[in-house]
Image 1 (tube, rainbow, N blue to C red):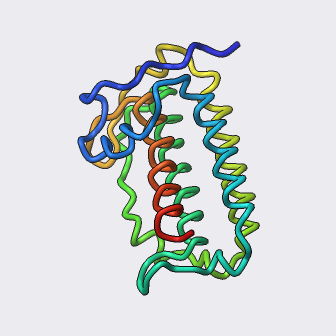
Image 2: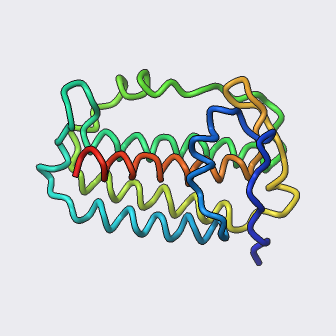
Length: 174
């Protein structure tokens, strides 16, 4: 049995930097939003050709493949943080420097199709995790990247991070 979806997090539940993501999430059931958003993103991405996957909107910017890989990596990190804190882990978790992570992987060597399939799996795992959290688990806090954050804020950050990158994809790549 799943618990009711959490209310929008308060500003004191996440670092100010993440407001740019939290503000992009609609006022609706969060888990349903993540499911719908994932399906919409998958439909958009599956409409792209492998050649479009290599496109960069200007030199030095990420390719579409890199953007998709980054969204999956980011969701994994935020989901792990949510899992750890929901389970009561009190250890502070490290940050994620996206440029260092990107230097450690060659998403462009993969097919766009494989990256899309990976995103689909990552999102399914996130939804399964969040769907069954108790109200107490949603409210738990931990420290990541040197900032205190709640589980519910992390879930909103996941949705907002994806929304941000899909907006960039639509505005600059397509």
